[in-house]
Length: 109
Image (cartoon, rainbow, N blue to C red; front, side, top):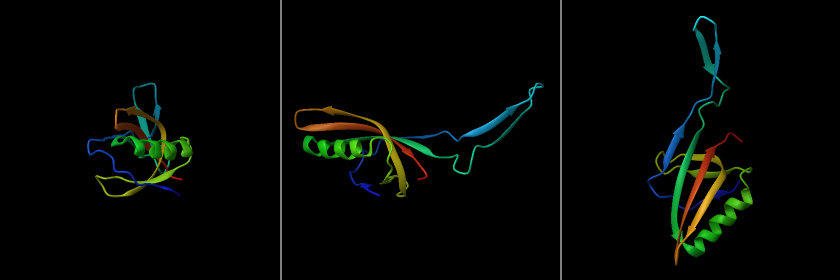
C-alpha cells in the first residue's frame, strides 16, 4: 500500500460522525446502538501549500487512487498512521505555487 508523504498545513479540519443504529418507538422512546465494529471513522479536510511542480505529483498520486483505493497517511496531530481514501480534491494554481484542498476519509481496508 502506498503512503502519502507530503506534509499538510496544520489548520486541518477533523470531522467525527459515529454511525448509530436507532430504533424509534411510538411513545417517544428510542434505542441506540453502534452501527458495526468500526463505527467511529473520521474524515479530514486537509490543505497543502506546495510548489506548482509538486502539485502535479500530488494530483497524480490522488488520481491513481481514484477515490477508491486506500493509502496510508500520517495524521500530523495524533502522529498515527491511518488508512484513508480521498474521494475529492481541488487544486488552486498560482504563478509558482499551488494550494491543494483534499478530503481524506478513514477506511478499514
